[in-house]
Length: 509
Ligand code: AHR
Image (cartoon, rainbow, N blue to C red):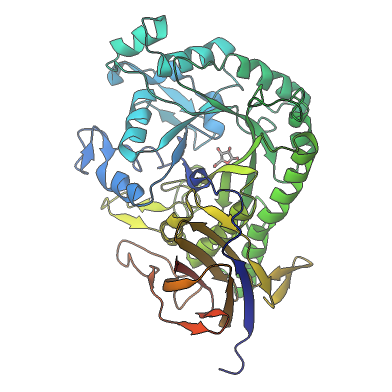
């Protein structure tokens, strides 16, 4: 064991930082490929067990994750979506072309009522993305009235006529999506004005309070964030929640190649393993820098940063529709996810929500459904969400790492250990990722400030870097109890196998 390098991590258990919002464990479901149709929605007459058309196994699996919110209907689709097409008797709903995703005809079987029903079954908050690109202010304003109004106002009466008496709660509202691209190809100044206007008509009806999220930057477009931040009048002086909107978003995808050849999901070299993890680690940099821009205008951190699209984007699986963005998901995707969550936890004071793209059958999905057999597969990324449940709404803890080792990728050093931690009452959760493809590490956890009276550890790993789950082998990558943890004079000593994710639950006195 002499050639196993040692890393040290110091955690002051008595110095809690900002709360990690459970909403950073949010999800995203777009009308894209088999995410909605085949993923969530099979229809009431399907042989696949369902509740009012919604797949029962998918709902049950997502309930295991306690998913806090679901973003819908897009994505690019949102700015083509006209909500009135998706209400009323299904057989009478108009059809439309889904021009972004496969140019297929959408029959609008899944609309507003189906989405809100899904959120209720999941116990998740609704995050509705409104159409700014091709819609109108009135259309959007009517939608929120339809969803959330209780009395005999015209939209509420129409909702009742369509079978839903009680208004729903819609806490999150997106103002456009990727306005710099598929959401209208707008200049930022133009979008900033539109966002103020649309935000004005995103009304709070009854006791529904809406958190408005303006479509934000692509990756490192700091000028976009800066211009949106100038929309606020005086954030430093205002005690009340800031208007016109409450948050700006950010989109960033991990891929190892250019758009034309993003890299394969399961067939990759060790070098591509590191490139993917280095690109994922870029999230830290993006949060830091967008956060610095926001701090300049908003030192009290009233405006949230919402990373409402993140994850890996690989070449589609051979033989599948290129417009459907269906990809497999390996141990590498799992470590991309742990790296993102560590960054979200470290920036808990600013990052109020994040949404992986996308929940089922699209991009870095947590669930895959087999179109032929109907079988449901939990991906390695699913297991990361499950292992991290203890971080939901817990207080973040700084993790001071030393001797993590590194590897040069794209001219920068990629640290080979990523970590984060949180505490709630008498329990702490520590997340440790060993990004080294080949080498194990020993990690000395120097635990200060509170007495640790018990611990339990779990590990997610597999022999091969590209290990993944399929209907035939659904648990090739699944969490297991980890017995490589010992007491140490400074706290605990933890074995980190190569390419692994380890979580430690600590019981505190
Ligand atoms: O998640 C897939 C697409 O990626 C979304 O529709 C769009 O917002 C982004 O470009």
